[in-house]
Image (cartoon, rainbow, N blue to C red; front, side):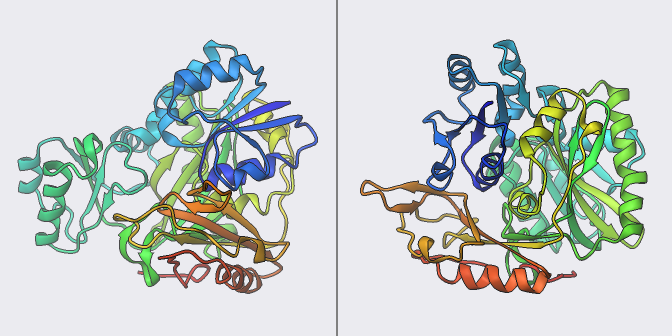
Length: 421
């Protein structure tokens, strides 16, 4: 099969890396790809958000299956457009993609189908929101309704910080139009965890669990990022919690999709808070999480391409998805200054010094004029190691991450440890 993966980050590198292992694959492309993806796929110089360009290229190059990585082209309706030109696509259509593109859409869905989540209220007027500062007490959870590259959540600890955050979000427009509507939520206590699920019209099948680390600094301090590392499986999960998630969240979600006419095909990412009252949904995303994908796919023992095909053909229930017993840890190397402003174009060294059984997934890289690998994003690399135990995988990931150098490189040092608020 001729397969096109759309995107150019660490998630797409992990997807391409796993697809390249399939016996069903004859040719793998990635648009636009990056310096790491170039090792396993032919990179196509078309932006992931150039919907017309992607559709034309896929049609002209007889693509059998397109796989959409990022959320923005999904929200732009790329799946619907590719269907119009006869290209089978793994990913939810535009209607379903509202589950990530609009926080209020998801909160309404959760409330309508009695799926546990935080209490919430929506605001489109800044003055009205300022008049309701501290609505649910502090910390106060402020979420930009639209897409904000994983950074649209602000959690001020007091009234002064909340007022400043509201002014920045709705006044200064630091998240652009994404914060024209803000969802204020009750602050949930507990520990965050992530669950990725394959979904077709008839089934929702959870992948192995993972824990993400969103804050930039150790011990979950500082501003939110797109994710500074993950490990899988989560040490927080047990059979009781997994049963609660299936009964209270997964099954009602699939039933809700059917009731609401949401013909979801793809990956549903569920951000969870494991609270004293049981698991609650923090957010839905419409695609593989990043960097959860790097840890989770490192443990997949089945043919990813076969799973993708089964989802697009609504026969997911017929596929026996197998996982390795090994544990996985992914440590992100980020540019200095991220998630704020940062410099690009720094030369990366040490990529050839990592162990053979460690995978360095590229998130923000490009080739320089002389073929050297340069930084080109906030999150640059995700060093992913597996081992028989969490401690073994964690030690291996950090040992190898330390071998990679670029000016301003930064990483958290507590990935793989359980952090409680």
